[in-house]
Length: 248
Image (cartoon, rainbow, N blue to C red; front, top):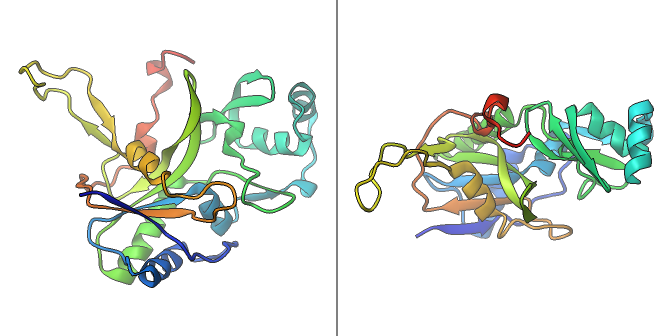
């Protein structure tokens, strides 16, 4: 049986907060604890806040490109400046939406620069290296508990052909992010030719069912009972190389 627990009771995260320690403390206070094989999913916003990957908008000076895009989209020019600083390139602009490719290779709205749950006048960028962030949280949890776990750093992304956003893994540690089933027989014995399951994204999306949005203040979840394949590949493995991309 798979269970998903919201991690409640975390303090307000600031730069320098030890997320590993606080997650373990909160899980123990809830009576859930950390068990062998758990998957801990953490919202990128609290990871960014703990690591100091936050812009103070008042300290940003919008350049010509940011001013031009702000005029097209109606966004705060300083927010647009932060978006451009986190982007390799602008993919598309439509209405108030700026789709970019981030420094990590993720294609998403606003380079993942988030104004929600950060505090007035601030914007949270994505962690500088989300896979390294996941590794650090995982090592801290394992050191504190003696239990083997996996950690996913997640963010909500839209999909180009479907409405609504879902959580995806932007960083992970301790599990194989992709389950490659190519070559396995289907129900009728036909070999699967293209079946690759993004387990990391599926777990991130499942965790979002209990991770709080807006003011709910639940930035992490524990998934228990899913038998994943241990591994050391990060979520960077999930990003499709440009030469394989059919849409961009």
